[in-house]
Length: 140
Image (cartoon, rainbow, N blue to C red; front, side, top):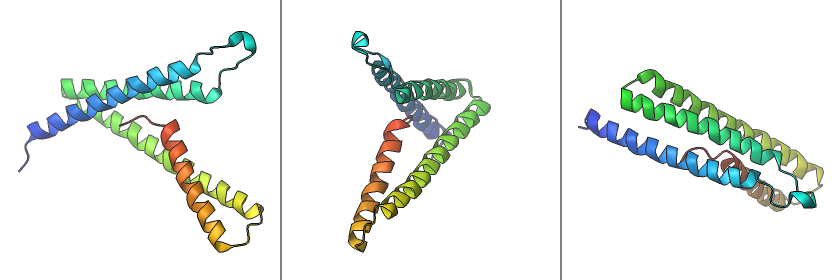
């Protein structure tokens, strides 16, 4: 039978990995926001700014989880769980919408063979999953 101490240790490991992932995402997204060649007309992409804001929000909720574990505050842990649930719902909604848009695009390109449609649909689904995971990577 497992004890509360074991679950507490697993919680600290999880929150340590989450904080590390959030900090690394902030470092990565802050490097992509910087414009190297400003004088040559290089613009900052909106996606990198959105990823930076999401990584900052993720860091706040991961710090909330850490303080909830340290101070034994269940409310803080519940806030983090609601945040994670919201992130996963948004990821699933993006995947669903991406699959529908991809299916419409495939249908409009007049692909006639079923094998070609299946291969393109599988490739499109995998690529949408990869893009959503890379753009919204907030947890390890």
